[in-house]
Image 1 (cartoon, helix red, strand yellow):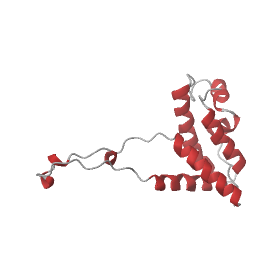
Image 2 (cartoon, rainbow, N blue to C red):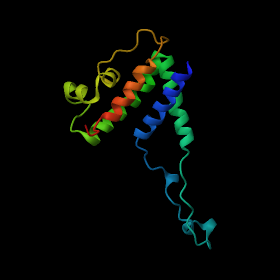
Image 3 (cartoon, one colour):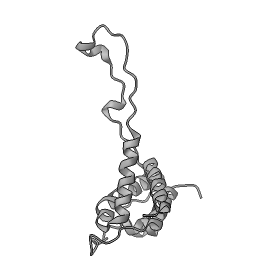
Image 4 (cartoon, one colour):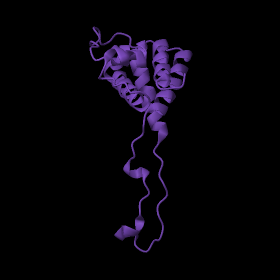
Length: 151
């Protein structure tokens, strides 16, 4: 992998991470220590804990790197992530359902994203072949960002 591809993967990872909605986790909420018997007598709330974004970024970066190097990882790992992102972006910004009208969905997400998320996409013939080219991955990320963006 060249330095340019590595930079592209890192930038794509940051962009994909920014698009992924983060569900609330238990440790994202303040914990009322007054109700805990072990902490009785203390009159404070614990501070908000922020989740480790470095580990999330590393996971996305690893997923993108695997998807470029292996057709199986592109299909089994990248495809579900892009499908979920496209479905969410379409639901948030347009009236198009990814599972609904295929022509409208293909037009809304663009050809590069549609090639990954289309329901009739076959398994790769050679699982160990190269995965998605870095330039196409960049176009996929850009297409996802454009869904619902003002024109």
